[in-house]
Length: 362
Ligand SMILES: Cc1ncc(COP(=O)(O)O)c(C=O)c1O
Image 1 (cartoon, rainbow, N blue to C red):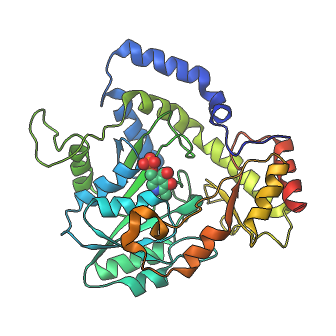
Image 2 (image 1 turned 60 degrees about the horizontal axis):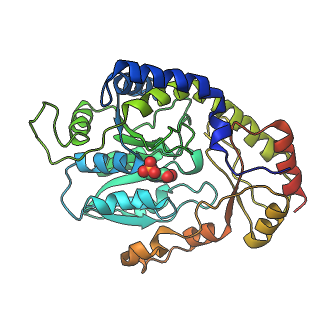
Image 3 (image 1 turned 180 degrees about the vertical axis):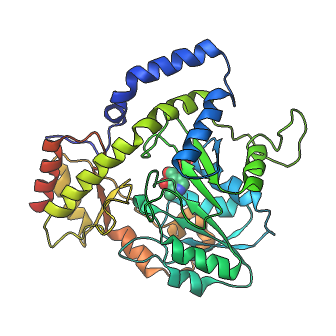
């Protein structure tokens, strides 16, 4: 049985006829930028996230950069960020002229640990960028308490955690702003690049609305040096359609993750924690193994797709030579051992059983 790691065509198949009518409506209306679809998606997504505001932007990296820019921090201000994240989380800090302070995650949850935040705070620290990696929410009560006590901004990279819960709510308590990506492979994915900033702050929402449109809210008047980061009207229409199906996609992901956790028994594999099975968004199902190349051979022979999130740590990337001095043994070990197996709502029951059987036979 051949199973791709992720087939976007298969994942989007249930939405095809609605996408066609969304496109017809878009053509019929004749408004292409920042119009009804964007406004309606912003209202619906804010409500979905239990937040006051959602502002559509061009992609997840821009969402992060616009948040950081809106904080108006002195150049070189330090932002504490987990070292084991996607390149974009750290790049956003660098691109804003700020200094990322890379810290180790908790090895079991893969998420930034409160202890490492506390150890990294200096007089230049202005914020924490917490990443809900693989679909699991960070420990927001503890992180928000630290941020409050130390007078730090709390920004969340939620590119992988649409619809995840924390204490039963989709809100990240204590966060000043949350950045979402709707890149096509995300749990809520558009058909092109797209992103959003979610916040409870009126001042931030106003600033981001201006910054995404060159720094202007009144036509031809520019209050800030912004950029062009507008969410496409067409993509906002597709996102409105897919947002309605997101709870069902999450339900399926949780059910499949539940089966993997209950039925994969192999001492050579370390499975992700299942303590938040019903709260995690399960963007990825990440397994750790001491001999990854052997497992890859086994999966390839069985024709099961896989991916690695991520094969090389950000501080070891050529683009980040300035961070090469960091010694981050937990992060480096994670990058050497992790492998992601297929998990998404388009998988059939026989496919799930075949993946379980193949991992048990390894
Ligand atoms: C954790 C994380 N942060 C940021 C991003 C950047 O999002 P985008 O590709 O939409 O710019 C991604 C997307 O891949 C991501 O996974």
